[in-house]
Image (cartoon, rainbow, N blue to C red):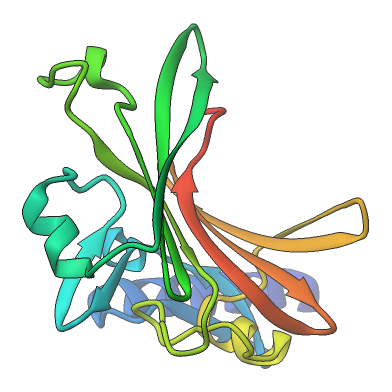
Amino acid sequence: MNKITSYVLSFSLFFSSAIAYAKNNDVNSVQLNGQVSVLTLSNSDFTITLNHKSISLGEGWSDDVEKNIGQSQTDDFVGTVDYGDETYKFYRHQYDGLDVYTSNLWWDKAERTVDDYIIAQITLKSSELKTSRGASVGISLTQLHTLYGTGQVTESNGTQRIHYSYGKKRISFKIAGDKVSSIIMSYNKED
């Protein structure tokens, strides 16, 4: 066996073992040469805790959920948004350091009525609120990479965002001056 084949086999075995270890030990990333190369998100990455209660992307919007979050500063109709061939209604509920968007998203594809709403987006704008991994507004880009890995970077109109996806769900971090300036948990329109 030549050196190149031996190296490739060794690397493949190491990489496979690292992935298996991560899956079996609930590890969210694997590091190779100090760089995060594999990242696994789960539904818990789309849940935050407020007032000792959890709210999650996709959770049904009800009086109890609204009460658990606290008194909103404003509630307003945002408009309708196209998802594929369908159009759904969105409302914004603003709180101190937090926006929650509710929608009748996919009511027609689920066992819900047109008036049944879910949490369709959670936007964190305060350093007091954290993701399930501990990310918050104000952390550095280095800290973000430690918690989530490198992610998919996009730039538009001078604004950089780093995205991580799990099925139809996406968590996005807006970056300003090498720090996180807001965190958005939402659904991908493309899926």
